[in-house]
Length: 267
Image (tube, rainbow, N blue to C red; front, top):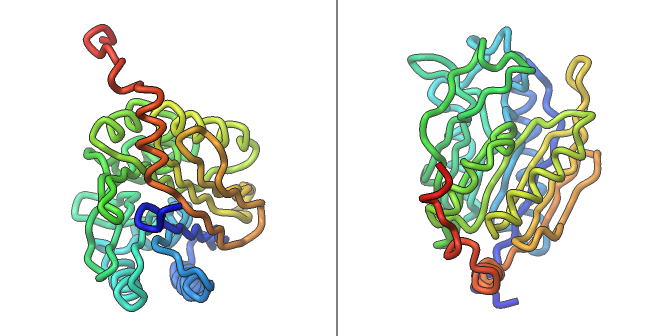
């Protein structure tokens, strides 16, 4: 592959201790350092959803990171020190009007380049009772390539992924806390988003146990043909994978889905 179009990704599939932010910060920092020790250093680090607090929703007002300050300080400094992009999973972020489930992204110089608050709140975990829904899409650039961000439950809404693709995204980052027993849904939905939008889907799930809920991991990178580039098992692990941006252009040229759309007939 042409190195100018190749991006190496590291997905930090970690256990999250619900209600213990400081333990989670320490675990994340340890795994970030380990990821950067790899012989082929990654260009991008990515984490699971709500990695700072887990789903301790009844205490989330007290646990959430005010304006993402602590998370920003850690991730910005780490990105600058190691010259790596960070798509920071998502955090519980406390703002003036409530708590949001927010992805923060940083470039190689440690600059905060994007944020995205989860749009679709998951009623089965009572998110709508404790969290505020975001109201804008998440877009960023990774090595001059347009990318989009969605969070967990968002992947059940194909309209959002399609909008990001129409806006130019070639990569889609999806942090999650996706539990058992819905592994088949996880794989199928991620693969569908990749195939229908002819983009890479890069999804980082957590693993481990939280109360009565278990999480199966299976973080994965899927290419625009729907082929799995890399997939983790259920253990705590750093998953590495390479993506080739030229493949996106090739697939979109060979099957010109976006040119053949007839949006005037869809509403």
